[in-house]
Image (cartoon, rainbow, N blue to C red; front, side):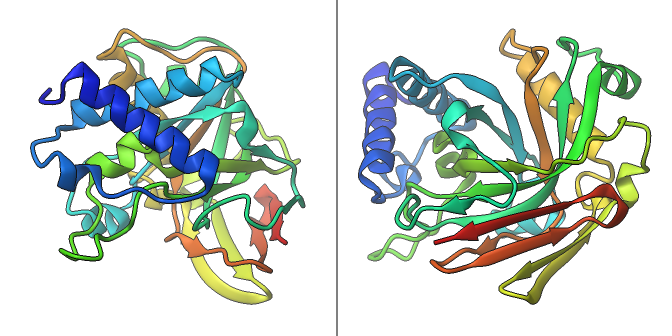
Length: 268
């Protein structure tokens, strides 16, 4: 790590205020050029601590940057993760109030709800499936409290910025359909996502590290490095298998997962 405790607290406070005030701050990677991923996760942890102190609870985890397309966009070879909080959950078919987010985007994912704890570097795919209560179609709402590009230098966000910003977490929508984790070949679960009636993206579960379960494994193994694990009742977003879709005011999203389910979301 290269950031001081003061730098970490200051960055987290800036991000907290940016979300509260619906504005963006400058790139942390530009302000701190030597910033590492460990630094970024430390900022994320402090940001989440600040939010929990404000009364929010933890409801799960998200895994991001799992597809090759998104990794190539940021010139990385590893996913990232963030923490889902209690104010992020939206009902299927909900209307997001105008101005609730800054620059929201939508991704389609398979969500896992857990019924048993999981922790450790030795956890296997079979153990993930055994610990899963059900899987369900979902949408993730991304937002960024950090500029996507610096207006002066034209430098773009790096993974350190995204991780510090709680992996661009903003909201989740879970479908009403519930399936046993082995009821479908999750690699072949597909989705057609329409915005205002127009098909914007399609994808297959295999776009997530060749198997959405692999995304969950990656998260558990990463958490083990910090002495953490997954708790019963937590929701895990396994990673998107479409590119993010912009969600300007008035957008209507319809995610058709075929036999797996269906999720909708509207922006006022």
